[in-house]
Length: 190
Image (cartoon, rainbow, N blue to C red; front, side, top):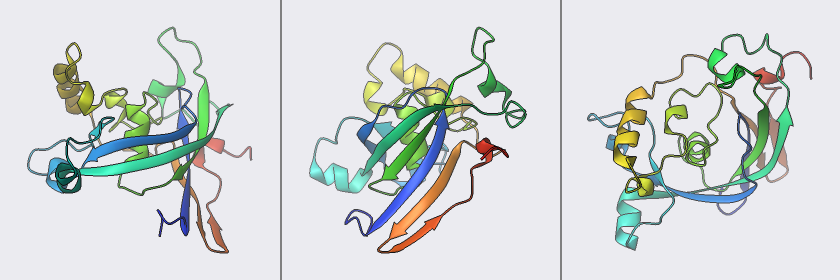
């Protein structure tokens, strides 16, 4: 239904980097045993490069497409961010600029938005599972210390213990539209 555009899912995400507008295609490692089971990482690993063959694509990879339709700078009340100290200041101890993106899923995979934004170098605030992987993809392992960097990032990945800057904002099916309440990062302002 989703790929036939009969069902549309819209997400809101907050990052500290501007997310590029447009369609984004990534490939996610498909076997469930690779994520969190049998010693595999708890996060979903991605690649920008398509698999070598259709058989490998069907067997081991999920094609993931999302469209970033809007990305705007926003202000977040510092009191709302009290439990997110790692996201509220940059390396120079200056306030961070936040960006809210409106994202339309073309495919719907578990952790898709989180993994794809992280692969683009724009991890979601508070997402301790994917922030360490920011900008890292499986096809980038040959570059410099890629494999070592990925191992280090996976070792630092932790399941978040507080809400992250992601909200399933709306679902549209035919003439039916269901919309979520205001996301937590809006605070009491909107």
